[in-house]
Length: 377
Image (cartoon, rainbow, N blue to C red; front, side, top):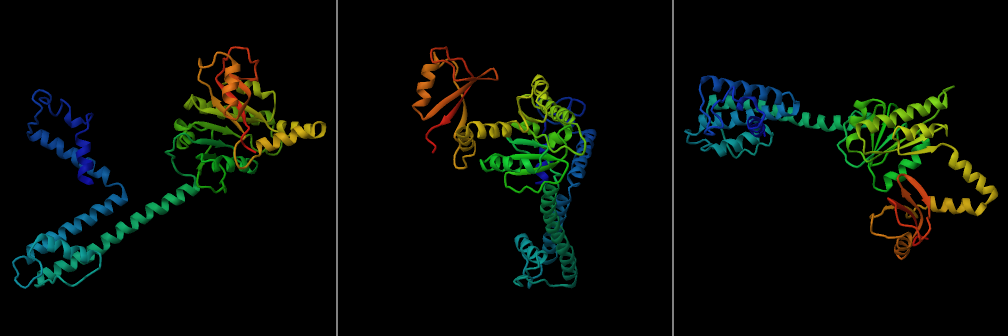
């Protein structure tokens, strides 16, 4: 691995030792003519790369163990190959003995003769046990640190097409649970520890207002983001909370213009400002529940229907699907095709505006449709 790393570093196109400064004749005949200065440059670059490579503890432990094994195999072979009664007469037999020794297996099928060889063997035993122990401990530390870092939110996510959640609280738990159970990967960005446990949910310690924290959450590869309003602390102004949510959405859009941002707001008057700065969708906290309560009193059947459609746990009854532009001449052909598939079109989306079931005779001009899956009961 070490050799591969160094060779890969040397043959990189942007490697300074391949430049005209070191190899002015490279490119003319594609041959390296090494002189003293070039050899010195190679040596300096080699040791710099080696030093950088050795900064990692687990690599240092692995290299140390490799050195001990190599030393043990070569030295015992040189000391024992000419001894008739010895069990070592080839490099492979010496390597076999060395591996038995450093791993403390000790089959006893290979014997060592002579004081010098046995003293050397004791050195190999001491160094070998220490090197293998160091490597094992380093490897275990990497796994333990990884688990602790993930629990503390000190990680950098490498996911794609995931969902970033800001201002997570207990009210948002049910929403996150359902999204995660649908197979979506979620990154929760919060300054407070998150106790929510799910295999698809990852915690990142930080704020949605900080570019570095968003970068650790994989903002550039995320597909959607949800900015919850969170709980109002003490006498905090709801408008100020909304302003913070809008700023979070703006920062996300700045780092990833293609991300779809949904912001939860307290004040309905903040919706206009959120949409003006590029936030794709807003939800005012309390509005939906207020409408459901109103309909429960005035039209009890309507609220029950909405709850059944939105709260179906087995399968989604409502859905949205992108429409192939130019395929349908009128909404009549669009409605007919989807209704034959058990999808009742309720509305269409055009330029981010929702149109409730346009007339059949009108020209079909929309980006997507919102439908009710009538095959779900």
